Image 1 (tube, rainbow, N blue to C red):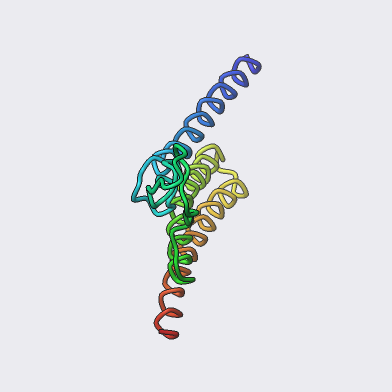
Image 2: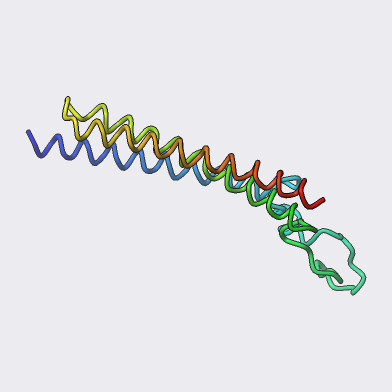
Length: 145
């Protein structure tokens, strides 16, 4: 009976990992296909920003595209903060769900409950600090402009 329970738990974990993997990678793939995305990958996949072809060679441009799409340090920081927030949202969600899972399976064990609470707390704290970092960059930009 114990072996069957372990097998069921492993199947649930495999399914959860598959959903996490697809849920995390699918938005990134949609950003790569979009031309107005914060990462600037769409234009890079289509052969560059200019669209000029003066050499006569198919698909070759005279100028190198800017893969980041940022002309200033402030724009670069903005694009990086958007990218980090985009990546952090599913990670924070997964960590909160994991913390809730730890609390649910604790069975009243105080150390397991504390571990689950700490996981949720630190995930929220890290996400809050990431959001504050974007605000700090705005303040620094205002100070130097």
